Length: 268
Image (cartoon, rainbow, N blue to C red):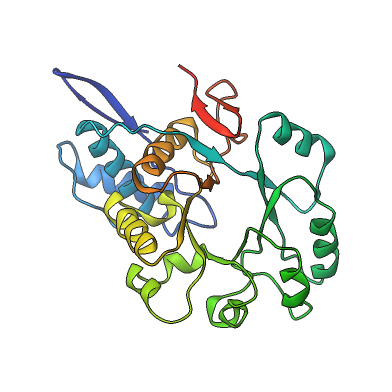
């Protein structure tokens, strides 16, 4: 946790929490960079994504960029569609679920499970894991809301006319201007902890909106402090009405947020 304080203002807090296995930097690298910099503000960008996310959020708070508006969330399920998980989402008013797919050799079973999932708009997320047994025409018949990263873009682009593809990992490999050329995805999924500064996220959101693409924000398992920052960035950068991957998870304090009518709100 980073803190910024002055005699004239309340203490401001932000979270720099690299996600193991996904962030390019480690917590030790973040700590070492801060130790080298020492005290003082403003702090230059570090090129460590999770730290730049936190530094940008401190600056937003310092500049008084409080955001307003409802943030609707989608649910997140693994390949086992448990009745109690689904019932909890219904009780929260969540109307969209993202289901993790892409297990090796399980495309038919995953397709069948999704075809039996009723009452929700469905997003699939394969983390580029769909194998040679994947039948895009069969999956197109599911009328998915989005399909995140069925495969690396060089392979997935051939399915763009049949499936509502979304970039997630690909966003970290390309530049915003890449949204303006060739066959592009229907949506971009932005994870600030993995991407960095507010300026970089703003460039992606602006490019996506300009290209007529959907903009979805998603967490990387930050604590309630980081999730509060993600809600602030979502309100500032994303068009209203989208469903975002910001449902509170097990690393958040259980009494820090409430979801009602599919809308997430902090608890004072």
